[in-house]
Image 1 (cartoon, helix red, strand yellow):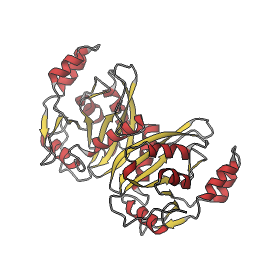
Image 2 (tube, chains in turn orange, green; image 1 turned 90 degrees about the horizontal axis):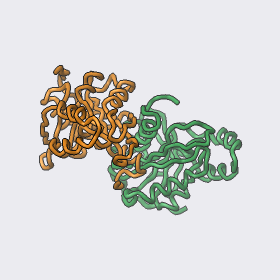
Image 3 (cartoon, chains in turn red, blue; image 1 turned 90 degrees about the vertical axis):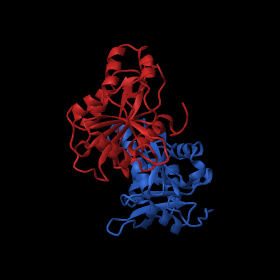
Image 4 (cartoon, helix red, strand yellow; image 1 turned 30 degrees about the vertical axis):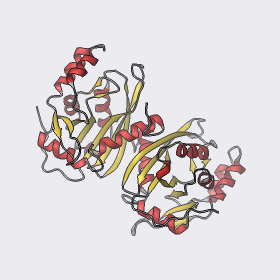
Length: 201
Length: 201
């Protein structure tokens, strides 16, 4: 697989964090998808958004389009997604996003993905073999410890070397053990959908 | 007028920045209103949102309700609004917000409000005398220079002394001459409404 060569990772490397808002499961509706453009783990430079179908198959395409139409695209060096599924089991093809944007992708999860459980759940959906194929294609799961006293996060990567991806994940985890672009994309997606970033579903 | 006494302003004082998203003028529709909860000028702790009617009269009430229902309310020390009108001429009564939330309010504008022009525009709307009364009640406009080489911002205040308000405005202007809670509320409101935080109307 092709990889982008990073000649040193600057503290203000532009990273897009992507997370979805809350949604009604099995509703046939859509979830808000938010992209937070960050300068490393320091501060926010822009906000992108789109919508993806609950349990649909459009997340990969929506992310590619959201990035490619953004005026921030020229500066973006890494795309980080919160895991590899949005709005239920709308699976994200990180290799395809890299291929069609030219920007390396790191899918970051707080919990180590349990592929056995995911497979059982995906099986209830139409086109489950395609969805499952995309999830398997995301490749090996690496654990990265961002803080000495916190649990590690888990990543899958496309278009970037493991060592470079680890460095970006650690560099951006400034306020929490979760990288800042993902922490803030999460706050925005919840806060806009609910009117309050921490209310429960 | 009652004022809150600040015993020193901490670098991580919790400040809510409130700004509206873009909207169709005279549409009879609504605009997104975003509240960004900040720790001083450093980082974002939460996101609140609501909607206000274009050229309506509900902005004051919507902000009061958004703040009073938030789990962040107990920590919030200052509310900053982007100017004193949202969604056209939906005017904000900063004294009323202070009175009904107990949290001091600073309305901050990049341009010095030209009250003569505003009065001419407001006159085309229903209840214009009430709107105009609210705008005049916001009181004296103070200029605050946040950066040595940038233009000043302009503020009107409720429930806070001029010197304390100046300190909060300067402390939070970390990334731009505009206080960070307002800069980021603006990025979020545009990014969610348009899908891109910088696209023009």
